[in-house]
Image (cartoon, rainbow, N blue to C red):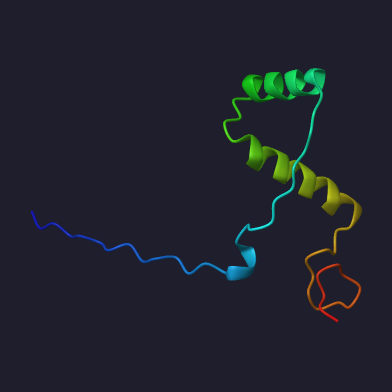
Length: 79
């Protein structure tokens, strides 16, 4: 039996997608308990990812063209 070893290619990372900006959120005790319970119930291990995805989903509902770079009326268009 011949063994084939595959070398993994290093993924090219887009420098613009690297998360370097930090935002802090503060919750009161009740809010923290609710978040902890929700994450436990739904087996969410990465709370940062959960909160980031929840925030971005809410933003995209209100502004669905946010990441369309061709248009001049988006938030990410450089002027």
